[in-house]
Length: 463
Image (tube, rainbow, N blue to C red; front, side, top):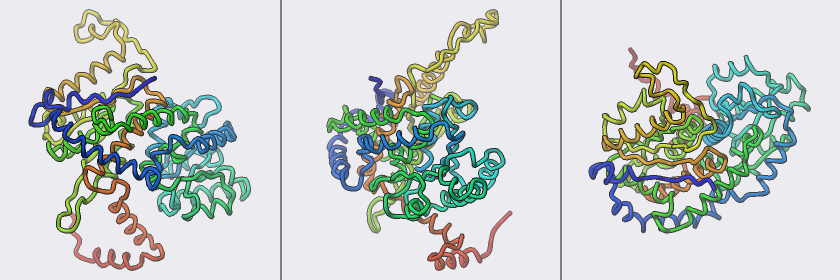
């Protein structure tokens, strides 16, 4: 079985130095707190943290597969209309498990995938300029059905489909993933007869990738969703032990807390040494930032907590960010995503052997160079006393990606307990949504609109 491994050797003081590295004693000293955090998280598994059991929802998995089979070959494009947790996971799974050139030449019988996770008019306008909606299946994803970005897109593409195909035929081009009973979209689904899937209760957006939110588009473009879920289930089993150093989620959560609270590392960099894994770093940035960036405590004792997530891609960002990482402020710690065996072997020709700057590359392979670049960066970080750990993927497969997703979700859930916050709400995001509703004239938000207008009426400073 392919098992991903968390190597935290270079996060310890023995490698990164006592000022910046964590001692094994400090980490082991977190054992009781992490065990208590695990008990609290597990205590909510059947109550309001239903995402923990997503790997075992076999009836739902079969429903998704049956739908994907029923529409196979009928559409040239699958278009995800969603944002945040309704988009980042979909893109990450696609780029990890399908060809980076899938949209150029998809395998026979499989559609292209487009994730329109913004309302920038140039993005939507360019899509309309280049893609015929009649060739598309639109996967509308919103649990509440009130997400302004997603619903505006839904209104646009629904009307275009009706105008081109007619009231009846347009319905085959829309499937909806939303709440089982509540929200704006469910009655629309029932009235229109759209194909639909359920976002289960107790599954927040950033923890929803293993639900129909992420599985529907994945199955439609040929990803092995059962392998993905089997990997997640295997990681769940590993996360059940209360023995700290045998539980990768506990170790990672403990390291994150210690790095920020004890070592002053307020920035968590995910450095993906795999082109295929680059969007997993984007997915994790939302998971970490939106879950842990909160106010901890009560009353006068409240304080802001949470690391700032940063994404980097190796080797690309060796030439844009590593200078900062190696010689800049000591406010970062690093997680490298590493791959053992790649799907392709690309030999380097032994040309120009009389030139030292090129001769050493001849008769080697691109994978060897990639590995040397990765290991060189890890050595440079460690030598500069920049703590780092590595999540090692033996290969990039549905099974290993499923393990990673579940590991990070579980680790972030534990982090919430350590930081003393609710990892599953997002009050800061809601404030921005309310302001947007007011500015767009949504009914019920008139008072907020007046407050904004009054605040903006003051003197403006521009240059």
